[in-house]
Length: 159
Ligand SMILES: [Zn+2]
Image 1: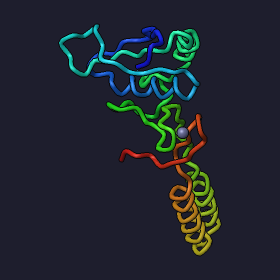
Image 2: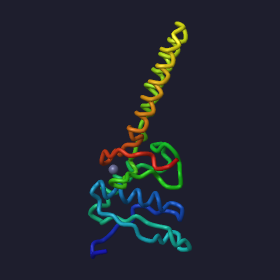
Image 3: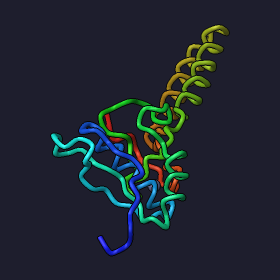
Image 4: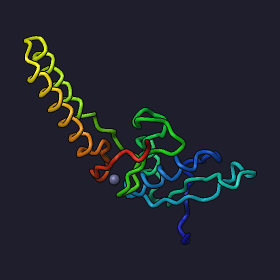
C-alpha cells in the first residue's frame, strides 16, 4: 500500500471471500484501483475481507459496485459456493449460453416424426440420427458460457 488514502467500499463475511474476489476483479476491470484487506468487522474470522479503493477512485468504485454481479442475483446459472469466473480475465459477469444443440435435435425429431407418420422408416431413422449427431456436435463445439467482460467463451467448469 502506498501513501494514498483508501476508502472502505464493502465488507465481507468469512463465507464471502469468493464474492470479495469477484468484486475486486470487477472493480479492476472498471479501472478502479482497489485492494482486499483483512476486515476489522469480523475480528474472529481470519478470512473476513474488506474491499478498499484509492480515495480518488472511491466514487467510481461505489458506482461500479452497484453494477457488480452478485453471486446469487440470478446472472449465474447455478448458485455454487464459488461464482463462475471467466478463465481469461477472472470476471464473474458470465452468461450461460443457450443449449444450441437442442435445435437440430428437435428438428431431427420432427423429421423422424414425419417419417414415422408417413410410414417411411428410413426417413425416420435418418432424421433421428442426423438430429442427434448435429445436436451432439453443436453442444460439444459450442462453449456454453460467454464472458461479458472480455468476450471469452469457455465450457461450464462444473459437472
Ligand atoms: Zn473474461
